[in-house]
Length: 457
Image (spheres, rainbow, N blue to C red):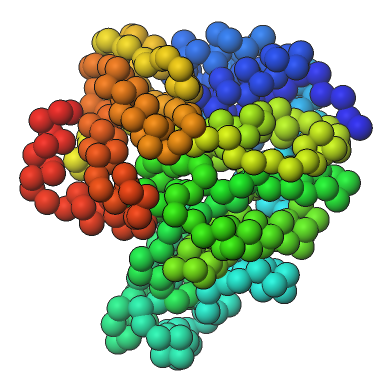
């Protein structure tokens, strides 16, 4: 096993703080990195050391592999944690860390490459017996796309092989437009990902988005820590997550958990991983596998009592899963709301300075955030301010607790999406747990709702 004594965190914001806290509890020293814009950020204050890695734009700092490796070497770090976003799923970054003799706290670079290529991932899952939607490999022409769509049936969705997080997708309803849509999508994918490869799948019109948390060691041990419901979305971006999923047939849950473990075993995966599925009635289909810690990992922690970041570090050090290989049962229910600096109606980012701040507390309330009164939200980075997580014995109680916590949350000086979360939590589809990935955009599309959100923003 590898001894990890000092971890450089190649990230910022609340995830950097999350890793610092996990390390401190097990006696591991931490090194924060920061841009010139983030010099006064909390993660630079709470870490044992801090190193400036460049100016504000992420391309010159948090995405600069050379500067990050130099910071790790200068500080004497023996491991690097990528967090999520930025370079967390970039195989070339993991390669660079390992070539410099440091431990990358994540999976093998080859696993990242395989799961990052959506076409290869589909093919691998098919061979492993994991259900996938009817679809194609990389499309070579508009004629090939048309023939595939005619065989599968409309609507279909074009996806970027190198895409992820909802980017690089185009739905096709008209067969006569598929060739021109493919051409446009290829150009956009090339610009966004440096790869224009596209593939096609049957489009599921009213799915649920369910994901399974995987924990796997380097000795062949693999377990799952249940599912998370991530169907409250806007433009494929998650807004609210919960665990466990409501109104989820036990037989389907069991099969999905088995499929997620089969997916991990098929590639001899190790580290944390999340296998994401589309649920269409009682049928589910592999969507993608994320090879990092997820933003929404907190709800799994709340219902299992497992510190997933500490597990990620143990797995990277080569420790076996023995202590987790027991029968887990979800303890109650957890809900997470992503708090963003954005307009609650049009979702435009809203950078600026927080002039007043009061965060909620009380039984079963957790706030993961990096902001404070006087903190300036930069236009350079993601608009997420933090995550508000609650836990309660039942889903009904968790909803009530989240409503109470949102009512206590005060963030002034900038626009936030708190009003949107309050609105969602009182909508019948969410309250009953009968909703799909289009619930939010479908129900938001009215002047009355928009006026209500504006009045409470």
